[in-house]
Length: 238
Image 1 (cartoon, one colour):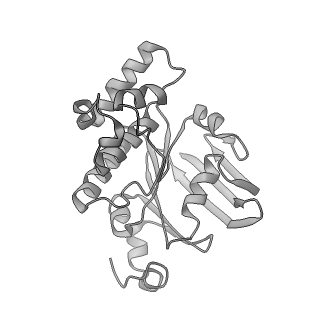
Image 2 (cartoon, rainbow, N blue to C red):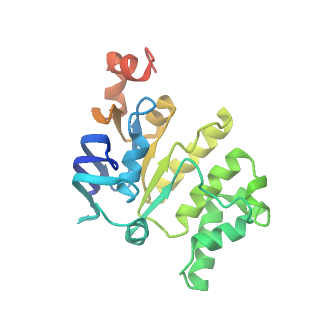
């Protein structure tokens, strides 16, 4: 079953057009990766899904309904979580306070259950539950950011370069958690700067460049497209 369908999407910010005729399918229970050079429009794609960009034309169908043009809070209530690359935690608050704020509106019993579920996925955060988020390491902050998005129990999780500026060992750990979330039934759409890492965990991959889809298919297919890898990613092989 296709959980998210994007059809003929043109979007951007005001008069600045960023995406052109983008078509994407995200199957339920899968990891779909969006890769491409800097400035390709990858973040704008996620922003478009989450109501943070202007939709000029096209459709964004989530779970059978067109969500194009809805506000972020409406999209969140439908079952989409978003972890942006920046400004994704409250640094002055404790880990627990971050989790509580992310679950505003949930009855206490549901909140406690969600906290238990999230801390089961990220046991390190349980050890840090009373620490100020601003004192956490880079990897711990990324895990907290993902945990915050999970507090509303999303069907689809949007991840924007959650491994940026992390040490290689932390990149590995964060992506292992992404795979773990998929195994728990959460559908993942991930924008990833490390193309080789994305291809290792993804079921399907889209190559985005200059606002247009240049490739759509399985990772193993892209690995055979040496000219695309070199032209758009600046690498000769993965």
